[in-house]
Image (cartoon, rainbow, N blue to C red):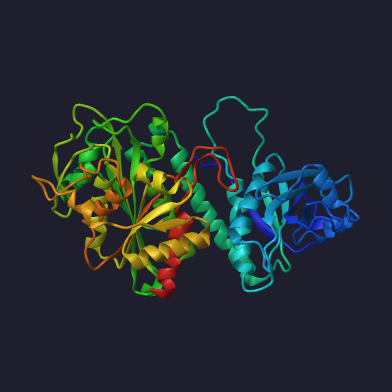
Length: 522
């Protein structure tokens, strides 16, 4: 199922003269000193809106203020132009307070573009005249605007059988006003944004698909088909191959479902061998998580269709890698299973022989993600990797510790810091967390090499327990980072910025940034 796509291109025509259905400008909130002849809270037009303001004879900010505009981040105010400019509607999107001597941060522009395009659903053609710096920060700002617009125009195709009269179609075409539409750097940024946004949209589509339509075999087929079309090498291990290969963790989790598990491996090899470095990406693909025998509460369980968001992100990232062609070898590993309670389910007390030969005592079948990831991470290390990035909706502890927007990252300290920097650069924040020795001590088993969880800590340090367990399946020569996206991988609230309700596509943009970083810097 493919959702309708928004297209994007550059234009250097005067924004006031663009033949579009709406023109988007930026406004800042501006606080002035009382007693100086201005209201305590005034609006300030962002750069890019000069010709629009001139057409309104200097009355644009006052009119917007009368309509309730404050310039707050993500606020969208629409104003009929009544012929003052070519577009019939001007849309002012809030950018927050004016930065001191600088352009708005890329993430502010990304969220503003997303909010505006989303609010303009029903308008076929929209132009963005948002502030873009004319210095070294210009490419990052343009990339942010383009990504925000393309992602703000996302809408899952859905399953409704009847026309929805009140449901307006997403914006079909976005034009971004720039000084020179033919500039090679600007064109390259747009091309990259289109590839990246396309990957994020693919990830969102997979996450938003109903779980009865995306059980492990179907998910594997969908990813494999898209990957082959993109030119990637594809290997799919079915249940027989998994059994022959000794993937005990994947098989254990998947044995309770009539839909058997899979492991999908996707490989990109750069022309000429590239930098010689090898990046492995691993993503959790639990297509639905009931908790198994350790069954979850019914409330909110329907969101467990998103427990494959990590695999969706890795599969989508590989599609973008194929398009962007970085000079580094990248391999994606997507272990997939459906965690169901049945007469064939794995049980608390079971001892599972993992791919790397370690024996794991199962204490909680709802700690299934780490079981399938461990096998995939061990395989990635065996295949050869210099850097391993794994991402998963692994623990509710991540949400408790860091909320719904910030991912937790654990692993090799230097690599965790690189993930944090990449997250800041892409608007997908992540925060490094420790892997304490006392957590590992409590995971000692009387009968096996390690227990799944620290029974003595129960839910305490839950996020850290996941990272400590996964560390056991990474070889010493591989730098690694575990990115827990239990919160940011799925957005259950109202749409905001370039996030719509449902799958977010996090951390596709972070992973692509990291791949580029490794290609450039090792």
